[in-house]
Image (cartoon, rainbow, N blue to C red; front, top):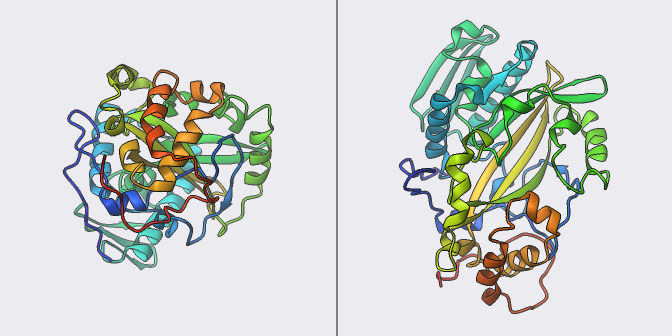
Length: 355
């Protein structure tokens, strides 16, 4: 089915981003229970689940064109947001092939990949791109292969090189991150990259995750959800640009918090790559205002309970301390205390009107 893109929406300045009702209902809500604690929470990345966002290896939705344009703006201002170490060239081509094949198979009305041996032609109709090139010869592309294809995909991507019984962040395209820096993290080991996360290390979450990922097989990708919160629908909340987005937290009031405060969910997917044996880590960011989330009955109630009872160290790490009480107060009228079923499906086909 043809996607109705919203090319003119923005993720900065006037913040014209918004979700259609259909986009709200397909949002990958991350809380299957009324309380939240860190866990590995990895499952096979196969078609199907509580949201259509899980239906394809890489999700393309109504925000695709606008998000790609936003990425181009970030890279124009700071080209270091895309960085790949020289020994990762095979992983660059692996990534290009994986994303092109996936897009062309999942969305044939928008993307076409034609191959004749190593002579490939790629057509991206939403972005008006058509390029012919020789697979394996970077000089035949207008950009390095990893940058070329990740400029045309939603979300961030890192390349993990596996060696010494560990994973190393040896490349990435990172323009929509939740307060971490590729420039700082590139070359780090798996545990170093996740060092700032509270409680999870003590619980052994990252030890178990690393052991699992070192055994990740080609053709058997996995996924998990992560979350935080963001004031305004701003994709680029990088440490480098903290002066631009940090003060946003001071703009929240009881009157505007429903519209301005967004749940920020990352659909994280991990693919073993065939030639390089590296792992491609996709970090697809979704934003939805708590006003819109509250229009889905089970989500408004559950988000109220999760935020209300969030462990203080987690609340502080996710940057919610300043406004959490205000958000809980906003959501409280939507929660009648009824017992909720486990799971994250919206359990309704239409949205309640905004209050």
